[in-house]
Image (cartoon, rainbow, N blue to C red):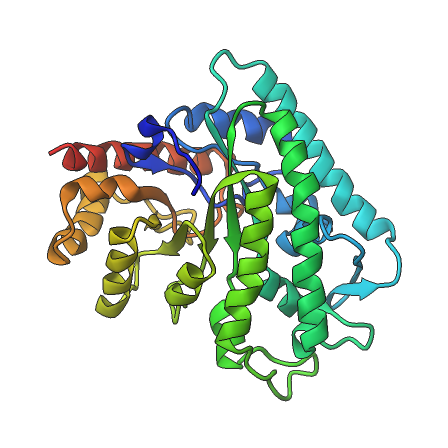
Length: 347
C-alpha cells in the first residue's frame, strides 16, 4: 500500500479536475499552484482552448506507446504512424511539463503532492476510431491494445512529471466520463443508426486494473477513477484496486451514498464534486450550504465526523468553460469548503 504523509491524510483537501480556461500554461500553472498551496492538491492544467491535441482524448493519446493517432473531422483515428496531429499533442504536453518545472523550481515551498489526469482506457476506446471510421470500442482486440498501450506509456509520463516537481508524491486521476454508456450499450456507432454492444463489467475492471497496476509501478501514490454520478460503477472502481472514487454529489441516490460510505469505511478516498460549475455565470453557493450538503448525508449514514478527512473536494466538472477569474474563484471557494469540513472533522 502507498505510504501517505500523516498531515495530508489528517485533513480535507481541495483540488480540481484538470481542464482550465485560456491558452497560457504559465498563467494557468501559477494560478493553480497559488490557490492550491499545501495541504491542497495542485494539478497539471489541461487547456483545450489551444485546439487539436490539447483536448482530453488527444492529450492522453499522445502518451500511448506503439499506437499512433491523427485528427479527422469525426474525431481521433488510430493510424499506422504518427503524424502532425500526434506531434502537436505531444508538443503541447511537453510544453506544459516544462512550464510546470519552471514554476515549481521558483517556489520556496514546493508542493508535497501533485496530480495529473488521464482519459481512462474505456472512454479512450469510445473516442478513438479504427481505420474504417468505426469506434475502437467495437473491437475487443482494439480495446485491449489501447489499455495495454496506455499502461505502457504512463511510466515515461510519470518520470517526466517527477523531474518537474522533484520530491512531490504523484496522484493520478483516471477520467471515465463515458463509462455508464459503455456498460449500458448506448454508445452510438459512427453512423448513428445503432449502438455498440455493452462492454462486460469484468472487462472494465481488468482494463482499469491494468492501468492502476502500471501507475503504481511508475510511482503513483494515489489513484482515483473519476466517473459521472448516473449509473456509476463504484464496485468496479474498487475491484480494480483504485484508492478512491471521484464523483459529483449533486444527484447521488441513497443507494450510491451507501456504496460510497462502505468504500470510505474500508479505507478508500472520496473525491467529492461539491461545487456545481456547469454554468460559469451562476453564483457559487455559499460555504455553509456546501458543507451542509456533504455533512447531512454523511451524518445520516452514521459515518463519524473524523472520517471526513478521507475527502478531497472538487468542482462538479472541469473549468475550461470559465474565465480565468471565475475558475480562480472556484479554487478559492473549494479551499474554504475544505476548511469548513475540517472544522467538523476535528469536532
